[in-house]
Amino acid sequence: MNGSQHRRVVAFTATQIPGIDDRRYPPELAGPLYPEGIPIYPESELEHLVKDYHVDRCDLAYSDLSEHDVMEIMCRVLCAKADFETLCPQRTMLRSTKPVIAVTAVRTGSGKSQVSKYVIGVLKEHGLRTALVRHPMPYGDLAKQAVQRFSSYEDLDKQNVTIEEREEYEQHISGGTIVYAGVDYEAILRQAEKEADVIIWDGGNNDTPFYKPQPGLWICVADPHRAGQESTYYPGNVNFKCADVIIINKANTAPKEAVEKLKEAARARNPRAEVMVTDSVITVDNPKIIKGKRVVTVDDGPTITHGGMAYGAGKFAAEQHSAKIVDPKPYFVGSLKKLLQKYPHDFCTIPAIGYSPQQIKDLAETINKADADAVIIATPMDLNKLIRINKPTTKVKYEVSDEPEGPKLRDIINKFVKSVVKIP
Image 1 (cartoon, rainbow, N blue to C red):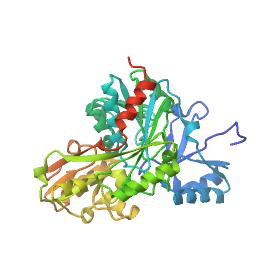
Image 2: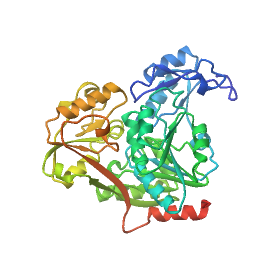
Image 3: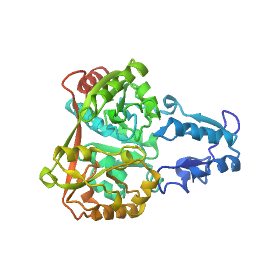
Image 4: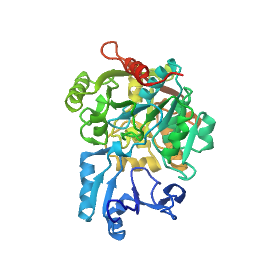
């Protein structure tokens, strides 16, 4: 790169997700300046890349990083003799011709999709069409994934999506919501605008919005089970400080003091934001299967792995029905067994990891090997559609609900519709 006006991207690095490095960002997406595309390397090669490509500047575009991890990456870049920068979200957002409600979070697994479903439900009551745009999940052929549209389970099968993608898409599709995803977020936005009155940005992990919520709302969901992390994880701390609305979710399963701690943090760090508390109501479709039984739970993969949680909704479903959770870790095989080394925090559930056919096979074998009477499927997708399980299963559902006292999310959305949206 030479000069502030003439910059050339020489490489991307990747981490956290297996199998997405050691390939190329395709030339048809990179543009005419990159006829051969842009190489993608493992982050472990960062210092060598700076030297070999004579890099002047490295931009951080990761998410769900602790402050320590951000500083460590910065230190590596500076010691390699390059500048280190982060990207301003307001400068990287694409401007929509339609109102945008951006749903973001402090950490992955805080309940963004629950909030998005709630918001969409209220918008539908006003007769408004919505399109939900998900954060990119570039696990396959990037050129073929430029713009993806999902409106049915058949669409998921046609595009051969991973478990992680199903976790995010299925729950919206089942409610009749059109989901967009992919890689080219300008093209995605323009297509979504053609069939929606309001765009819902449902960000992955704790990323900042890709679309400018003006006019609109920037919502940040905070998790009282991880109180304190609203100021120590990047870029969730940016969401928390910039949001118009802060939702403290899962209040019904979290300690009251943790909820109060988040309220205090919101007042101190973002005094202009409207703050409200919601419950995450957990139900199971067949309680008889797990009542008083020995069970294993399967929870959202990213929440348990890089999200750092020791448990998910399955724990509370088990407690509701006096089920005893069996420690699944002794039964982990293959790629799941490797997770115990990469994520050493003590979790008591099976993370639904399935970025590749082998990982899906390992997940099925782990569940089937576990010495338990039944399985609580607490990941947002129905695993029975993808793998054969040799034990009775019950599916967990969780939905956001306004608390009886205090401000209501419904009122915020109604106010947004009245002041911003032109009802057809």
